[in-house]
Length: 442
Image (tube, rainbow, N blue to C red):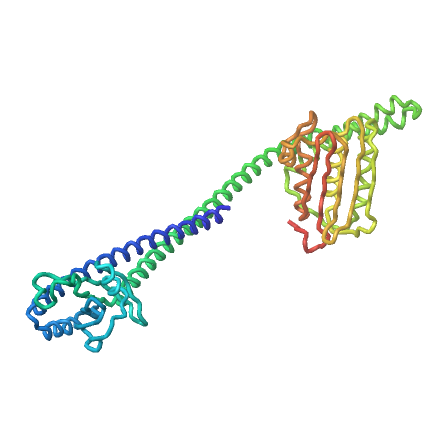
């Protein structure tokens, strides 16, 4: 998104720069034209004064020689003096004398009796022309009489092509300078963005390292606590369980009330033992032991746990196994823990009963396990945190069940998905790769 913003900003900056350079160049070009037009007018006035005296004296050869001499001036293309009908009488190009002018600017000056200035384009010539009307004055009456008001037109043509090329070079220089400046700014912007991205990534890595350090320290403390709990609780729990087994053999099987109490005690012992196991599993590093195993059998081996918890819950268990799933490399003990934790989570979400669906499917590149309940569902605001260690919304438990599920599945190079709707139920999907090469053995 940031890169796209920089690209858009760069394009807008380029457009703005092109507009600024274009306006500057047009302004410079227009100013140059106005300046040349003024100079052409001043030059025409100067020529008019230069030939005025020879014309009054009748020295017409001097007038012609003056115009020929003017041809040597830089950028001066031609000078004509015509009569009131547009016939050239004097010219810097002698071959044009006594020929009608083809210049529209001269004809316009004659017709409108005013100064006219504009560009004329003929073949390869590109000329800035200025036409100055020559009016009949008292000192001209002895030759031209008093009837005529307009005697002719003095026309000066300046070769605009070299000036135009010079202006184009200036324009190209402006464009090149602007583009160079833009390129430098763009490169600096990209470098800044790259530095910013690197800094962001470094900050993220630092945050991750800090989080990992905090997690490691937390797990070390939990591990010490778990070791103490395991040492102090597992032996008594095992003793109590053996005592329950012994009492079960001595008590009358027909006494259902006492037998149910014993089963409740056994269930609570299993729950307490499972809490200790979860803490130990999460707090200490686990090295997976890969062996080929069938997922359907692993699920069936956990069903006794479902039956114990489901005794008074009236939960209907629906098994939908894909019998074509081959045995794949996995740590059976760890995957069994995943199934137990997910089943326990679903059963606890249906205290008043419901349907528990366990489904397995073989996909082209993976094995899919779905555990779906019709329980209370998960609040949308809690969905992002359910795999966070020690996060729980239940009255019982330490909030490690789903964290352990996520950790074990990730070590198998798989991933877990969850979909939930409040008051309708929750579905967990576990996906495991079916190729050995795709399994992370770390």
